[in-house]
Image (cartoon, rainbow, N blue to C red; front, side):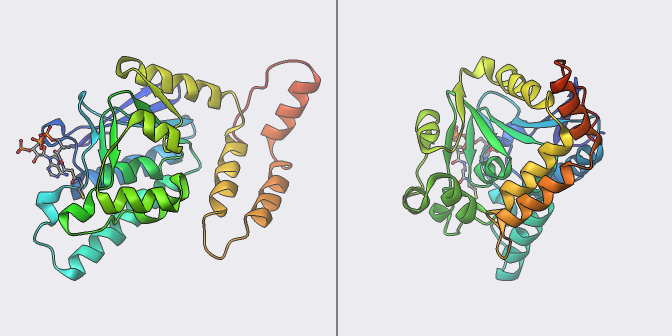
Length: 260
Ligand code: COA
C-alpha cells in the first residue's frame, strides 16, 4: 500500500499509520482524507491486522487541523459537502471499525486533528501535545464531528468553553478531562501505545469488534445500547473464539484466538 500523504508500517499484527505532511503540520487536506479512507478500509478488512495506531510525522504535530488553504474559498454547499463527505469517509469509518484504532497524539491536535483523534477508539498523548477546536477563530464551527464527540468525552460545559474560546489545552489537562487516557514522554509514545496494543491482541478479535459496536450504540440516535449488547453477547456464543477462550480458561492455558 503506497500513499502520497501517509506512511504505513506493519509490525506484529499492528499497523502504524503516520500522517506525513510535516511541512504543513500534517494538516488534513482532501487527498490525505482520501488516503486515510482507503488505507483504513483496507486494513480493517485484513484479519492479520489486529490494532491500528494513528500518529503524525515529526515532533511538532499530530494534525494541526483541516487544511485551511483548501477550504478558505468554499461556498455554503461546498462547506457542507466537505464536512459530510469527511465524516462519512473517515471519521465515522474509524469510529465504527471493528479493529481497534488508537490515536498516538505526538504534538498539536487541533480542529480536524483533534476530531480525528476523537473518532479513534481511545487516545494516548505525548507530554508536549496541545489540543483544541479553534474553528470559531476562523469563523466556522467544527465539522468533522467535534461538536458531538468533544462533549461526549469531556462533558458539555467543558466542550462549550473549549470551542467558544478556541483555546488549547495541554496533555495533562486533556488527561484530567478524560480526553486522553495516558500522557507519556514523546520519545516513549509509540512504544507505550504498542504496549497497549499488545494487551488488546491477547483477547478475542471477534469479541473486541462486538464490544466496540455495543459501546458505540450508546451514542447513536435510535439505538438501544442494552439491546445491542444483548444481541452481540449472544452472537459471541456461536464463535470459535468463545469456545477457545472458555476452554483455555478451564484447561488453565493461554487462549489462542483466531477471530472467528
Ligand atoms: N491548514 C493549512 N496549513 C497549516 C495548518 C492548517 N490547519 N496548520 C499549519 N499549517 C501550515 C502553516 O500555514 C505553515 O505553512 P507555511 O510554512 O507554508 O507557511 C506550516 O504549516 C507551519 O505552521 P506555522 O503556523 O508556521 O507553525 P507555528 O509553530 O507558528 O504554529 C500552530 C503552529 C499549530 C499554532 C499554527 O500552525 C496554527 O494555528 N494552525 C492552524 C490551527 C487551526 O486553526 N486548525 C483548525 C483548522 S479547522
